[in-house]
Amino acid sequence: MKIIWFTENYPPSKGGMSRSCDRIVANLRMHHTVDVFHFTNKTPAFTTENHENGTYTAIPVFEDSSHTLNMLWAFIKDHPLIKESAMFTGFGSHLCLKGITLMANWLQKPVLICFRGNDFDTAIFSQKKQDLLYTISNATAIACVASEKQERIKIMRLNDQVYFTPNSIDFKQWCILQSDLALANTIKTELKLTVKTNIIGLVGFLKQKKGVDFFIQTLQKSQLIKTVHLHIVGEIEPHIELELNRLEISYSKVLPTSKTELIANYLVCDAIAIPSIYDGMPNVIFEAAALNKPIIASKAGGIPDVLDKNTAFMFDVLSESDLLNALASYDNASQELLSKKSEQLLKQLKSNFTTAQETKSYLDIFNKITTKTHEN
Picture 1 (cartoon, rainbow, N blue to C red):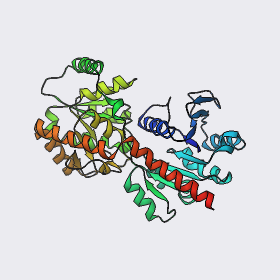
Picture 2: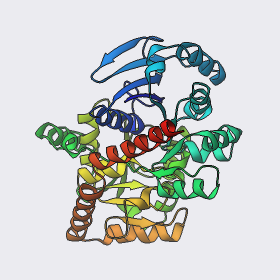
Picture 3: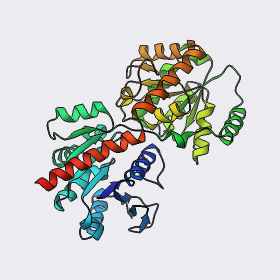
Picture 4: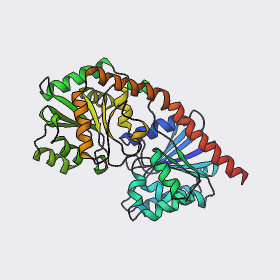
């Protein structure tokens, strides 16, 4: 089967969504041909590279999303790869939401639309709502990375083919090397913190949905504030840094440029916080678990699909009292309890969130929607 895969999130783009997309496509290519059409300006426009069991084509992005999609349509409508394909997949992002289902219908191709991070959450309450409603109503199937989004979309009664496709991690790619440990020791030494300092990591692109404002304001009222240092690994909005300085919370920030740097900065931390207000299923959960780091997390989006009170320090979204309790529970926890939670989480992920299971969930949907199309 030849699958056309549209996305804004794929290497050379960075970030968790890009890593997820790369992993999923690579595993699907063991079963089918996957031709990736990537919305990006980091590669020359409309250049196509041959990959193992597929191709990669860069689609230029313009300030006007309508022009971007018109350019895509002009390029693909008579393209031989498109004509030979069995189906389309749109993986996250507003450009996929706005244009891929419509183009698939024009070309009479079945289409799977994947809701990943906050694409559903932001569109449903914005001017993009009509694009979202059209896509949900007219896609052949919908894949959701969080079960709560699957349920919300089902309740809308616009499409009866809505599936839960959880994230995964390839644990072989997250083994700790001596070079990772050495770099972590160097980073920790450069931070010049005391032995008693509790380093909590905030990892990723820390947008508004990540709840960092709420987290630091609540942290300032907790017993942990006397010993805590926030290690920010990724991008942070300027107003958050201003707030950290105003509240006089100890922090450091770094933007890793390699996998080794990312792993080393995880290893520097005593725990990882994920205080999201709304979210998909963050890669940070899987990465922290692979590196045996305790997690303090909200019950937002797909987070409760993975974490519970036995595997993490959980709190209700935007509940100050609940977060204070979670922070106190973490601060008072013995090393034995921290290790037990991390071990249980790792065991659960290795049983229920493998790359093989992730790949199968997509393959099952592909088979179902292409079979249904042939029958019709």
